[in-house]
Amino acid sequence: MEKKNIKWGEIGFGYIPTDYRYYAEWKDGKWGEGKLTEDRTITMSECAGVLQYAQTCFEGLKAYTWKDGSIVTFRPDLNAERMQRSARRLLIPEVSTEMFLDALDQTVKANAAWVPPYGTGATLYIRPFLFGSGPVIGVAPAPEYQFRLFCTPVGPYFKGGIKPIKICVSDYDRAAPHGTGDIKAGLNYAMSLYPGDLAHKNGYAENMFLDAATRTNVEETGGANFLFVTKDGKLVTPKSSTILPSITRRSLVYVAQKYLGLTVEERVVPFAEVREFAEIGVCGTAAVISPVGEIDNHDEKIMVPSGTEKFGPVLGKLRETLTGIQNGDIEAPEGWIRKIL
Figure 1 (cartoon, rainbow, N blue to C red):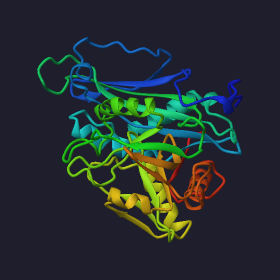
Figure 2 (tube, one colour):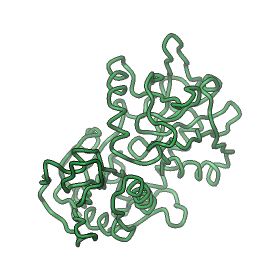
Figure 3 (cartoon, rainbow, N blue to C red):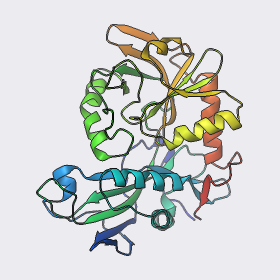
């Protein structure tokens, strides 16, 4: 397979249109047969549920080219399950795991030339999404829906690659108890845009959101889960019903325990404890792991002991191991890799 003539090592995390995308429509109580299209536009009612009441959810995953030329994805069954959970919460018809994986396979195969070559540091980001396309004026679920999936080659999520980022504690709340913080709803990300823009204007890469109920415990950023490393080498991840269950975080917890022999604690993390950690990072599909070098809480600066120039030893080894599994250089646990080509 001849790849596209792109300077793969120079691309950022942005939208580059590829050749094909997948779509299916839900009408009359069932999903129709999905198909590929070259049309990158969407036509729907001006009164569509997604436009009136933000009835939409999405997923994010990646495809990789291995050294032998094969193309794979990483744990896509978990993305299908998470999208089903999001759909149930938003009263959107669920897409079966079988349909989800078939859409994934078709789209990646059709865009195989866009999957960055092995060793370039770039990947093919895949965006499945569901939305209410039928007209609804009263507050109610839409009568019709679309399931779509497109892909785009991407480089590092944060500018500067994997150099430690500087973040700030947000004055805004990301999600309320018993709300939608634990699903991948578009409305959650819309709510993070304003505080995210404020953070960027003030020189920060991301926000640290605290729990809305007490504003004393660490939740997550606008789009990634936190990882902490104690001074004695334990990996700690925040636990909360309003945190999105990151597939990357779940995978890193397994890698930490089974590959690196680390002790892992999934628990409530008081903000007061943050200054005691030796390493801090954020993790997600887009970033994998990005180290944090500084956290600013208004007049207080917390300088992470691992520094502002490079990864700490534990998070660095975690990232190296997980990306090694994703890129085919380290043997994966059974069922983690789905080969497409």
